[in-house]
Length: 274
Ligand code: PEP
Ligand code: MN
Image (tube, rainbow, N blue to C red; front, side, top):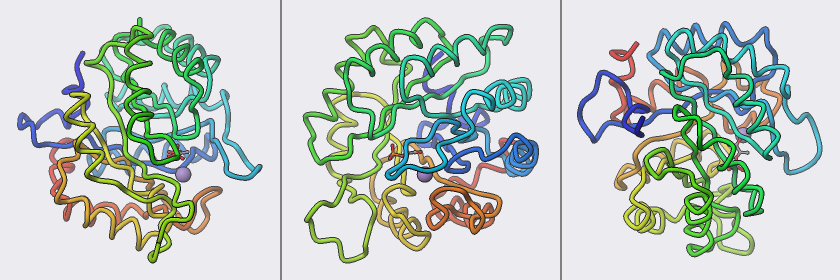
């Protein structure tokens, strides 16, 4: 499998995007069928459904492993691609174990988040996931602004034996620290750096406008700004009822807002892929 499998299947054109949408976190098993139903009806093929949540301050940190068999049962037999974050090697192993009995035909997207910068842990995750040929591994940029470190994550994952054809990266911005931040972005983009690294690494690079923006207005603005850059796709937080979301409620788009954005971002082929 190659990252082409993650693109909307009906599109042959390389310009077409990897689109990952879904809530900041899956909040209950009861919520799952409705998310799947509404997203599938709109042609969203890669469902963001994290169950392990790193948090800035302690709080609800995800459903945990309990959710995993339900996620796989709701997505994989329907040809939908689940996408979720792992924080440690134990999570990676649980994913591999839980996939027993499923065909290897449907891709799964796993990512390493910005806060997870212990290379030893990253290596272990990569080693555990590498043998499963339908698992794609995405790594976000780290929290702090450092091009060399971002490139270093890539080098570590390759050194751990994870094949380049199944690696993606994701720009989620850098912690503003004392940088000027007039719009109050949660994390500041460096689109030029992302494009330089895309070229250097030779893998697809997605944009996460949600964790950059921190608010719906900022998410939309960032997507507008990013349109001039050659991102290979987007991971956007979309909640069926953002006001009630357990986490990151201010930055999650409603499904309608996301569909409007998708139209603007030229990923309106979503519907046709359903
Ligand atoms: C996330 O995507 O759920 C997340 C925690 O984001 P980040 O790793 O970018 O902080
Ligand atoms: Mn979030």
